[in-house]
Length: 166
Image 1 (cartoon, rainbow, N blue to C red):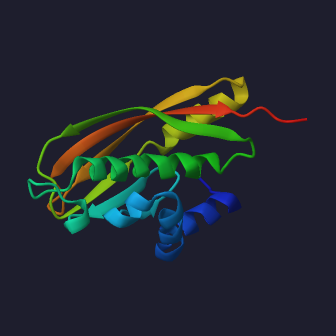
Image 2: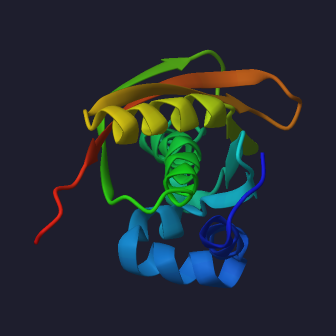
């Protein structure tokens, strides 16, 4: 699926180490301190990553679950924002629910991939056409460097058209 100029601009900013770093310092300081990065963004999927280190550790010598949750949420969030950029309408978005499941100790570099771009697109189009709020339950999975599943998250995003001021 083709992307428009606004989506291209957002993609460039999110994948730029420098520009996204500035954004994290001002808007997501804990993500900056934890070392969370975005490594891939397309209309279909987004990937974020975090590497085990001193600032994101827990007493069990693994990545703190809150850092894993931030990294996982970002993989769904950048995909939602990227999808919204396709439309001219002003739409608010908010996480309304989250669930996490931990399978294996998180050490090394963990990559989260959300492949729900088509689901975001479908539901946002419904929100615009029907002028009604919608929710999207986006899933993301975190894998270690050995490609072993470490954890799974589901974030439910709410989308709502903003009223135009006349």
